[in-house]
Image (cartoon, rainbow, N blue to C red; front, side):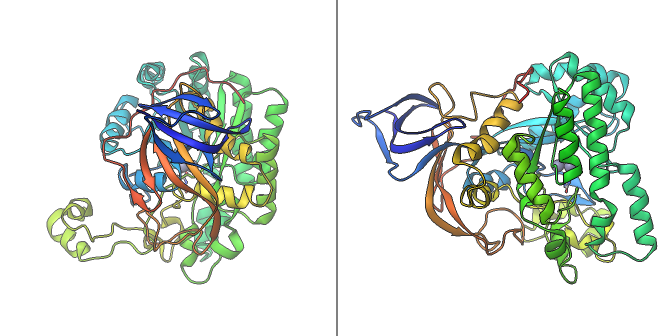
Length: 491
Ligand code: DUC
Ligand code: ZN
Ligand code: ZN
Protein backbone atom coordinates (compact mmCIF):
# COMPACT_ATOMS: atom_id res chain seq x y z
CA UNK A 1 0.00 0.00 0.00
CA UNK A 2 1.28 3.43 -0.93
CA UNK A 3 0.26 7.04 -0.53
CA UNK A 4 -1.42 8.47 -3.61
CA UNK A 5 -1.44 12.25 -4.06
CA UNK A 6 -4.42 12.69 -6.32
CA UNK A 7 -5.14 15.50 -8.80
CA UNK A 8 -2.53 17.97 -7.68
CA UNK A 9 -0.46 20.21 -9.92
CA UNK A 10 3.17 19.14 -9.69
CA UNK A 11 5.54 22.10 -9.68
CA UNK A 12 9.16 21.45 -10.56
CA UNK A 13 11.90 23.84 -11.60
CA UNK A 14 10.95 23.25 -15.22
CA UNK A 15 7.24 22.38 -15.38
CA UNK A 16 3.79 22.60 -13.89
CA UNK A 17 1.82 19.45 -14.68
CA UNK A 18 -1.46 18.13 -13.36
CA UNK A 19 -0.87 14.51 -12.35
CA UNK A 20 -1.03 11.93 -9.58
CA UNK A 21 2.01 10.97 -7.52
CA UNK A 22 2.37 7.56 -5.91
CA UNK A 23 4.73 7.09 -2.99
CA UNK A 24 5.82 3.73 -1.63
CA UNK A 25 8.10 3.59 1.36
CA UNK A 26 10.41 6.60 1.22
CA UNK A 27 10.36 7.11 -2.56
CA UNK A 28 8.19 8.42 -5.35
CA UNK A 29 7.48 5.33 -7.48
CA UNK A 30 5.02 6.53 -10.10
CA UNK A 31 3.78 9.78 -11.63
CA UNK A 32 0.87 9.57 -14.02
CA UNK A 33 -2.68 10.38 -14.97
CA UNK A 34 -5.58 8.62 -13.27
CA UNK A 35 -3.51 6.21 -11.19
CA UNK A 36 -6.00 3.72 -9.64
CA UNK A 37 -6.67 4.45 -5.99
CA UNK A 38 -7.27 0.88 -4.91
CA UNK A 39 -5.06 -0.26 -2.04
CA UNK A 40 -3.60 3.20 -1.42
CA UNK A 41 -4.14 5.91 1.10
CA UNK A 42 -5.41 8.80 -1.00
CA UNK A 43 -4.46 12.42 -0.35
CA UNK A 44 -6.88 14.59 -2.35
CA UNK A 45 -4.89 17.46 -3.89
CA UNK A 46 -7.46 19.26 -6.06
CA UNK A 47 -6.53 22.91 -6.31
CA UNK A 48 -3.19 22.26 -4.59
CA UNK A 49 0.39 22.36 -5.77
CA UNK A 50 2.72 19.43 -5.14
CA UNK A 51 6.21 20.77 -4.65
CA UNK A 52 9.49 19.31 -3.43
CA UNK A 53 10.26 20.06 0.22
CA UNK A 54 12.23 23.23 0.80
CA UNK A 55 15.97 23.00 1.34
CA UNK A 56 17.59 25.68 3.46
CA UNK A 57 21.34 25.48 2.90
CA UNK A 58 22.26 28.17 5.41
CA UNK A 59 21.31 27.70 9.06
CA UNK A 60 23.03 28.05 12.43
CA UNK A 61 21.31 25.80 14.94
CA UNK A 62 22.65 25.71 18.49
CA UNK A 63 25.66 27.85 17.59
CA UNK A 64 27.91 29.38 20.26
CA UNK A 65 28.02 32.94 19.02
CA UNK A 66 27.93 36.54 20.23
CA UNK A 67 28.35 35.64 23.90
CA UNK A 68 25.48 33.17 23.90
CA UNK A 69 24.01 30.35 21.81
CA UNK A 70 21.45 30.56 19.02
CA UNK A 71 18.15 29.31 20.40
CA UNK A 72 16.80 26.76 17.98
CA UNK A 73 18.44 23.37 17.92
CA UNK A 74 17.98 20.21 15.88
CA UNK A 75 14.73 19.58 17.72
CA UNK A 76 12.84 22.88 17.81
CA UNK A 77 14.46 24.24 14.64
CA UNK A 78 13.47 21.15 12.70
CA UNK A 79 9.88 21.28 13.78
CA UNK A 80 9.68 24.97 12.89
CA UNK A 81 11.30 24.33 9.52
CA UNK A 82 8.83 21.60 8.66
CA UNK A 83 5.82 23.73 9.61
CA UNK A 84 7.12 26.20 7.04
CA UNK A 85 7.64 23.58 4.31
CA UNK A 86 11.38 22.98 4.70
CA UNK A 87 12.30 19.29 4.87
CA UNK A 88 16.09 19.53 4.68
CA UNK A 89 18.72 21.99 5.80
CA UNK A 90 22.48 22.26 5.83
CA UNK A 91 24.00 23.59 9.03
CA UNK A 92 27.48 24.98 9.62
CA UNK A 93 29.56 22.68 11.79
CA UNK A 94 32.30 24.93 13.13
CA UNK A 95 35.87 23.71 13.58
CA UNK A 96 36.89 24.31 17.20
CA UNK A 97 40.05 26.45 17.40
CA UNK A 98 43.04 24.12 17.64
CA UNK A 99 40.83 21.18 16.65
CA UNK A 100 40.32 19.17 13.49
CA UNK A 101 37.56 19.38 10.90
CA UNK A 102 36.38 15.97 12.05
CA UNK A 103 35.95 17.37 15.56
CA UNK A 104 33.38 19.75 14.11
CA UNK A 105 31.60 16.82 12.50
CA UNK A 106 31.58 14.87 15.77
CA UNK A 107 30.18 17.81 17.71
CA UNK A 108 27.47 18.51 15.17
CA UNK A 109 26.52 14.85 14.80
CA UNK A 110 25.86 14.84 18.50
CA UNK A 111 23.77 18.01 18.26
CA UNK A 112 21.78 16.47 15.39
CA UNK A 113 20.62 13.39 17.32
CA UNK A 114 17.04 14.66 17.85
CA UNK A 115 16.66 15.40 14.11
CA UNK A 116 13.12 15.50 12.74
CA UNK A 117 13.92 16.61 9.17
CA UNK A 118 16.84 15.64 6.93
CA UNK A 119 20.08 17.54 7.30
CA UNK A 120 23.68 17.80 6.25
CA UNK A 121 26.71 19.84 7.28
CA UNK A 122 29.11 22.34 5.78
CA UNK A 123 32.36 22.57 7.72
CA UNK A 124 33.29 26.05 8.96
CA UNK A 125 37.07 26.31 8.73
CA UNK A 126 38.53 28.58 11.42
CA UNK A 127 42.09 27.29 11.83
CA UNK A 128 43.75 26.00 8.65
CA UNK A 129 46.96 24.38 9.89
CA UNK A 130 48.93 22.14 7.47
CA UNK A 131 47.36 18.98 8.82
CA UNK A 132 43.91 20.55 8.52
CA UNK A 133 44.57 21.39 4.87
CA UNK A 134 45.38 17.72 4.30
CA UNK A 135 42.22 16.71 6.14
CA UNK A 136 39.93 18.58 3.72
CA UNK A 137 39.50 15.83 1.07
CA UNK A 138 38.81 13.19 3.74
CA UNK A 139 35.48 14.93 4.39
CA UNK A 140 34.16 13.65 1.06
CA UNK A 141 33.90 10.10 2.42
CA UNK A 142 31.75 11.52 5.22
CA UNK A 143 29.35 13.05 2.68
CA UNK A 144 30.55 16.59 3.33
CA UNK A 145 31.64 18.46 0.21
CA UNK A 146 31.46 22.13 1.21
CA UNK A 147 33.64 24.36 3.38
CA UNK A 148 32.75 27.76 4.76
CA UNK A 149 35.22 30.52 5.47
CA UNK A 150 34.47 33.83 7.14
CA UNK A 151 36.15 36.95 5.76
CA UNK A 152 34.76 38.88 8.75
CA UNK A 153 34.28 38.43 12.53
CA UNK A 154 37.81 39.41 13.45
CA UNK A 155 39.26 37.34 16.31
CA UNK A 156 36.31 34.96 16.18
CA UNK A 157 35.87 33.16 12.85
CA UNK A 158 37.80 35.42 10.44
CA UNK A 159 40.46 33.92 8.20
CA UNK A 160 43.03 35.79 6.07
CA UNK A 161 43.48 35.82 2.29
CA UNK A 162 46.27 33.26 2.37
CA UNK A 163 43.97 30.84 4.16
CA UNK A 164 41.17 31.46 1.69
CA UNK A 165 43.54 30.91 -1.23
CA UNK A 166 44.94 27.66 0.23
CA UNK A 167 41.51 26.30 1.08
CA UNK A 168 40.21 27.12 -2.40
CA UNK A 169 43.20 25.52 -4.10
CA UNK A 170 42.70 22.34 -2.10
CA UNK A 171 38.91 22.28 -2.53
CA UNK A 172 39.25 22.81 -6.30
CA UNK A 173 41.50 19.74 -6.61
CA UNK A 174 38.76 17.59 -5.10
CA UNK A 175 35.65 19.09 -6.64
CA UNK A 176 34.52 20.61 -3.35
CA UNK A 177 32.75 23.92 -2.80
CA UNK A 178 34.04 26.90 -0.83
CA UNK A 179 31.45 29.21 0.68
CA UNK A 180 32.30 32.64 2.00
CA UNK A 181 30.80 35.12 4.38
CA UNK A 182 32.03 38.10 2.39
CA UNK A 183 32.65 41.27 4.37
CA UNK A 184 36.02 42.93 4.93
CA UNK A 185 36.46 42.21 8.64
CA UNK A 186 39.56 44.36 9.06
CA UNK A 187 37.78 47.46 7.79
CA UNK A 188 34.68 46.56 9.79
CA UNK A 189 36.81 46.49 12.94
CA UNK A 190 38.08 50.02 12.27
CA UNK A 191 34.65 51.40 11.46
CA UNK A 192 33.17 49.79 14.54
CA UNK A 193 35.83 51.26 16.83
CA UNK A 194 35.40 54.72 15.31
CA UNK A 195 31.62 54.59 15.72
CA UNK A 196 31.73 53.43 19.32
CA UNK A 197 34.37 56.05 20.18
CA UNK A 198 32.04 58.69 18.72
CA UNK A 199 29.19 57.50 20.96
CA UNK A 200 27.32 55.79 18.12
CA UNK A 201 26.09 52.75 19.99
CA UNK A 202 22.53 52.15 18.74
CA UNK A 203 21.39 49.10 16.76
CA UNK A 204 21.19 51.21 13.59
CA UNK A 205 24.88 52.10 13.94
CA UNK A 206 25.64 48.44 13.24
CA UNK A 207 24.76 49.30 9.64
CA UNK A 208 27.43 52.01 9.41
CA UNK A 209 30.07 49.56 10.62
CA UNK A 210 29.24 47.20 7.73
CA UNK A 211 28.34 49.31 4.67
CA UNK A 212 27.71 47.77 1.23
CA UNK A 213 31.24 48.67 0.11
CA UNK A 214 32.91 46.24 2.51
CA UNK A 215 30.58 43.48 1.37
CA UNK A 216 31.22 44.28 -2.29
CA UNK A 217 34.99 44.42 -1.80
CA UNK A 218 35.17 41.05 -0.04
CA UNK A 219 32.83 39.45 -2.55
CA UNK A 220 35.02 40.64 -5.39
CA UNK A 221 38.18 39.43 -3.62
CA UNK A 222 36.73 35.95 -3.13
CA UNK A 223 35.40 35.88 -6.69
CA UNK A 224 38.82 36.75 -8.13
CA UNK A 225 40.41 33.98 -6.04
CA UNK A 226 37.76 31.61 -7.39
CA UNK A 227 38.83 32.53 -10.91
CA UNK A 228 42.48 32.11 -10.01
CA UNK A 229 42.09 28.71 -8.36
CA UNK A 230 39.14 27.52 -10.45
CA UNK A 231 37.39 26.64 -7.20
CA UNK A 232 33.62 26.53 -7.00
CA UNK A 233 32.61 29.51 -4.89
CA UNK A 234 29.23 30.12 -3.26
CA UNK A 235 28.78 33.55 -1.72
CA UNK A 236 26.34 33.34 1.17
CA UNK A 237 23.80 36.00 2.17
CA UNK A 238 24.36 38.54 -0.60
CA UNK A 239 22.55 41.74 0.38
CA UNK A 240 23.53 44.59 -1.91
CA UNK A 241 24.36 45.99 -5.29
CA UNK A 242 28.19 45.99 -5.02
CA UNK A 243 28.19 42.30 -4.07
CA UNK A 244 25.73 41.36 -6.83
CA UNK A 245 27.85 43.27 -9.35
CA UNK A 246 31.02 41.46 -8.23
CA UNK A 247 29.31 38.10 -8.75
CA UNK A 248 27.83 39.14 -12.08
CA UNK A 249 31.22 40.27 -13.37
CA UNK A 250 32.93 37.07 -12.18
CA UNK A 251 30.32 34.93 -13.91
CA UNK A 252 30.70 36.93 -17.10
CA UNK A 253 34.41 36.16 -16.93
CA UNK A 254 33.54 32.47 -16.64
CA UNK A 255 34.57 32.05 -13.00
CA UNK A 256 32.74 29.25 -11.12
CA UNK A 257 30.94 31.66 -8.80
CA UNK A 258 27.42 31.27 -7.44
CA UNK A 259 25.52 32.95 -4.67
CA UNK A 260 22.42 33.17 -2.53
CA UNK A 261 20.49 35.82 -0.76
CA UNK A 262 18.24 35.31 2.26
CA UNK A 263 14.55 35.99 2.50
CA UNK A 264 14.91 38.83 5.02
CA UNK A 265 17.05 40.84 2.60
CA UNK A 266 14.00 41.30 0.35
CA UNK A 267 11.89 42.77 3.11
CA UNK A 268 13.60 44.13 6.20
CA UNK A 269 15.06 47.62 5.86
CA UNK A 270 17.67 49.69 7.57
CA UNK A 271 15.39 52.71 7.90
CA UNK A 272 12.19 51.13 9.16
CA UNK A 273 13.41 48.06 11.03
CA UNK A 274 17.04 48.50 12.08
CA UNK A 275 16.38 52.16 12.73
CA UNK A 276 13.23 51.57 14.82
CA UNK A 277 13.04 53.62 18.03
CA UNK A 278 14.75 52.49 21.23
CA UNK A 279 16.36 49.08 21.23
CA UNK A 280 13.75 47.55 18.88
CA UNK A 281 16.23 47.59 15.97
CA UNK A 282 18.30 44.91 17.74
CA UNK A 283 15.79 42.33 16.50
CA UNK A 284 17.08 42.96 12.98
CA UNK A 285 20.81 43.08 13.67
CA UNK A 286 22.52 40.53 11.47
CA UNK A 287 25.59 40.56 9.28
CA UNK A 288 25.76 41.68 6.60
CA UNK A 289 23.08 44.17 7.66
CA UNK A 290 19.66 44.53 6.11
CA UNK A 291 19.57 47.16 3.37
CA UNK A 292 16.98 49.59 2.04
CA UNK A 293 14.59 49.07 -0.88
CA UNK A 294 17.00 50.04 -3.63
CA UNK A 295 19.06 46.96 -2.79
CA UNK A 296 15.95 44.78 -2.53
CA UNK A 297 15.20 45.61 -6.15
CA UNK A 298 18.74 44.61 -7.16
CA UNK A 299 18.30 41.28 -5.38
CA UNK A 300 15.01 40.55 -7.14
CA UNK A 301 16.68 41.22 -10.45
CA UNK A 302 19.59 38.93 -9.46
CA UNK A 303 17.36 35.99 -8.54
CA UNK A 304 15.35 36.52 -11.70
CA UNK A 305 18.30 36.69 -14.10
CA UNK A 306 20.26 33.86 -12.44
CA UNK A 307 23.13 35.92 -10.99
CA UNK A 308 21.98 34.44 -7.66
CA UNK A 309 20.79 30.84 -7.71
CA UNK A 310 19.28 30.22 -4.28
CA UNK A 311 17.45 31.71 -1.32
CA UNK A 312 18.19 30.61 2.23
CA UNK A 313 17.68 32.08 5.71
CA UNK A 314 20.91 32.31 7.73
CA UNK A 315 18.55 31.26 10.54
CA UNK A 316 20.35 32.15 13.77
CA UNK A 317 17.80 33.18 16.33
CA UNK A 318 18.17 34.81 19.72
CA UNK A 319 15.68 36.04 22.28
CA UNK A 320 14.88 39.73 22.03
CA UNK A 321 14.50 39.67 25.78
CA UNK A 322 16.71 36.86 26.91
CA UNK A 323 18.52 36.17 30.15
CA UNK A 324 15.15 36.04 31.89
CA UNK A 325 14.92 34.27 35.22
CA UNK A 326 16.91 33.93 38.40
CA UNK A 327 19.82 32.37 36.58
CA UNK A 328 22.38 35.12 36.73
CA UNK A 329 22.52 34.98 40.51
CA UNK A 330 22.34 31.18 40.53
CA UNK A 331 25.05 30.86 37.93
CA UNK A 332 27.39 33.20 39.76
CA UNK A 333 26.93 31.24 42.96
CA UNK A 334 27.06 27.73 41.56
CA UNK A 335 28.81 27.66 38.34
CA UNK A 336 31.19 30.52 37.80
CA UNK A 337 28.67 32.29 35.58
CA UNK A 338 27.96 29.35 33.28
CA UNK A 339 24.22 29.49 32.57
CA UNK A 340 24.23 26.42 30.33
CA UNK A 341 24.07 24.06 33.31
CA UNK A 342 21.16 26.02 34.78
CA UNK A 343 19.22 25.86 31.55
CA UNK A 344 18.91 22.09 31.72
CA UNK A 345 17.05 22.24 35.04
CA UNK A 346 14.76 25.19 34.36
CA UNK A 347 12.91 24.98 31.05
CA UNK A 348 11.42 28.44 31.55
CA UNK A 349 14.87 29.96 31.61
CA UNK A 350 15.87 32.09 28.64
CA UNK A 351 19.53 32.14 27.73
CA UNK A 352 21.07 35.56 27.01
CA UNK A 353 19.88 37.21 23.81
CA UNK A 354 19.79 40.55 22.04
CA UNK A 355 19.76 42.49 25.32
CA UNK A 356 23.48 41.75 25.63
CA UNK A 357 24.02 44.68 23.26
CA UNK A 358 22.06 47.40 25.08
CA UNK A 359 24.31 50.46 24.93
CA UNK A 360 26.77 48.82 22.50
CA UNK A 361 25.56 47.58 19.10
CA UNK A 362 28.70 45.48 18.66
CA UNK A 363 27.58 43.22 21.52
CA UNK A 364 24.18 42.44 20.01
CA UNK A 365 24.22 38.77 18.95
CA UNK A 366 24.01 38.80 15.15
CA UNK A 367 21.18 36.90 13.56
CA UNK A 368 17.49 36.48 12.92
CA UNK A 369 14.84 33.77 12.91
CA UNK A 370 13.50 32.67 9.51
CA UNK A 371 13.70 28.91 9.00
CA UNK A 372 9.91 28.63 9.35
CA UNK A 373 9.03 31.71 7.31
CA UNK A 374 11.23 31.44 4.21
CA UNK A 375 8.93 29.48 1.88
CA UNK A 376 5.72 31.31 2.76
CA UNK A 377 7.30 34.76 2.60
CA UNK A 378 9.10 34.02 -0.68
CA UNK A 379 5.88 32.74 -2.19
CA UNK A 380 3.98 35.75 -0.97
CA UNK A 381 6.52 38.42 -1.95
CA UNK A 382 7.79 36.67 -5.06
CA UNK A 383 5.08 34.54 -6.65
CA UNK A 384 1.94 36.41 -5.58
CA UNK A 385 3.44 39.68 -6.81
CA UNK A 386 4.37 38.10 -10.16
CA UNK A 387 8.11 38.68 -9.68
CA UNK A 388 8.93 34.97 -9.97
CA UNK A 389 7.00 31.98 -11.28
CA UNK A 390 6.06 28.97 -9.13
CA UNK A 391 8.78 27.02 -10.99
CA UNK A 392 11.43 29.62 -10.22
CA UNK A 393 10.27 29.54 -6.59
CA UNK A 394 10.89 25.79 -6.50
CA UNK A 395 14.23 26.22 -8.25
CA UNK A 396 15.50 28.86 -5.81
CA UNK A 397 14.26 27.21 -2.64
CA UNK A 398 14.76 23.54 -3.36
CA UNK A 399 16.14 22.39 -6.73
CA UNK A 400 19.17 24.63 -7.03
CA UNK A 401 20.18 24.16 -3.38
CA UNK A 402 20.13 20.38 -3.98
CA UNK A 403 22.08 20.65 -7.23
CA UNK A 404 24.70 23.08 -5.95
CA UNK A 405 25.32 21.08 -2.78
CA UNK A 406 25.48 17.64 -4.35
CA UNK A 407 22.28 15.87 -3.35
CA UNK A 408 20.18 16.18 -6.51
CA UNK A 409 18.01 14.40 -7.61
CA UNK A 410 17.65 12.51 -4.34
CA UNK A 411 16.41 15.87 -3.02
CA UNK A 412 15.04 18.96 -4.70
CA UNK A 413 12.53 17.69 -7.21
CA UNK A 414 9.46 15.55 -7.76
CA UNK A 415 10.40 12.63 -10.00
CA UNK A 416 10.27 8.86 -9.94
CA UNK A 417 13.01 7.42 -7.73
CA UNK A 418 13.54 10.53 -5.61
CA UNK A 419 12.92 10.97 -1.89
CA UNK A 420 9.25 11.62 -1.27
CA UNK A 421 9.74 15.02 0.38
CA UNK A 422 6.48 16.54 -0.75
CA UNK A 423 4.60 19.70 0.11
CA UNK A 424 0.88 19.88 -0.48
CA UNK A 425 0.81 23.62 -1.00
CA UNK A 426 -2.45 25.51 -0.83
CA UNK A 427 -2.04 28.67 -2.93
CA UNK A 428 -5.37 30.04 -1.72
CA UNK A 429 -4.98 29.61 2.03
CA UNK A 430 -3.86 32.58 4.09
CA UNK A 431 -1.84 32.72 7.26
CA UNK A 432 -0.85 35.65 9.43
CA UNK A 433 2.70 35.29 10.65
CA UNK A 434 3.22 35.97 14.34
CA UNK A 435 5.58 35.12 17.17
CA UNK A 436 2.50 34.08 19.13
CA UNK A 437 1.88 31.15 16.77
CA UNK A 438 5.21 30.35 15.15
CA UNK A 439 7.25 27.32 16.21
CA UNK A 440 10.68 28.93 16.32
CA UNK A 441 12.12 29.33 19.78
CA UNK A 442 12.17 33.08 19.91
CA UNK A 443 9.97 35.89 21.21
CA UNK A 444 9.65 37.88 18.00
CA UNK A 445 9.08 37.37 14.33
CA UNK A 446 10.66 39.50 11.62
CA UNK A 447 7.43 39.34 9.57
CA UNK A 448 5.05 39.93 12.50
CA UNK A 449 1.54 40.63 11.19
CA UNK A 450 2.28 39.80 7.54
CA UNK A 451 -0.65 37.90 6.03
CA UNK A 452 0.73 35.54 3.45
CA UNK A 453 -1.34 33.74 0.84
CA UNK A 454 0.05 30.30 0.02
CA UNK A 455 0.90 27.82 2.77
CA UNK A 456 2.18 24.25 3.11
CA UNK A 457 -0.98 22.48 4.21
CA UNK A 458 0.72 19.08 4.48
CA UNK A 459 4.41 18.27 4.63
CA UNK A 460 5.91 14.84 3.90
CA UNK A 461 9.47 13.72 4.56
CA UNK A 462 10.52 10.55 2.73
CA UNK A 463 6.89 9.49 2.54
CA UNK A 464 6.03 10.19 6.20
CA UNK A 465 3.67 12.99 7.01
CA UNK A 466 5.23 15.49 9.41
CA UNK A 467 2.66 18.27 9.26
CA UNK A 468 -1.07 18.25 8.71
CA UNK A 469 -2.40 21.78 9.09
CA UNK A 470 -1.54 22.73 12.65
CA UNK A 471 -0.87 19.15 13.71
CA UNK A 472 2.67 17.88 14.31
CA UNK A 473 3.22 14.24 13.41
CA UNK A 474 7.02 14.07 13.28
CA UNK A 475 9.28 12.22 15.68
CA UNK A 476 12.72 12.87 17.08
CA UNK A 477 15.39 10.80 15.43
CA UNK A 478 13.54 10.40 12.14
CA UNK A 479 15.59 13.03 10.30
CA UNK A 480 18.53 11.50 8.44
CA UNK A 481 21.94 12.80 7.47
CA UNK A 482 22.16 13.42 3.70
CA UNK A 483 25.42 12.21 2.20
CA UNK A 484 26.43 14.73 -0.50
CA UNK A 485 28.64 14.30 -3.56
CA UNK A 486 31.50 16.45 -4.88
CA UNK A 487 31.78 17.84 -8.44
CA UNK A 488 28.32 19.35 -8.33
CA UNK A 489 27.28 21.39 -11.37
CA UNK A 490 28.06 25.08 -11.60
CA UNK A 491 24.74 26.77 -12.28
N1 DUC B 1 25.54 36.50 10.36
C1 DUC B 1 24.56 36.57 11.24
O1 DUC B 1 23.87 37.57 11.28
N2 DUC B 1 24.37 35.54 12.09
C2 DUC B 1 25.08 34.33 12.02
C3 DUC B 1 26.34 34.42 11.32
C4 DUC B 1 26.41 35.49 10.32
O2 DUC B 1 27.27 35.49 9.49
ZN1 ZN C 1 27.57 34.91 7.54
ZN1 ZN D 1 25.37 32.40 8.43
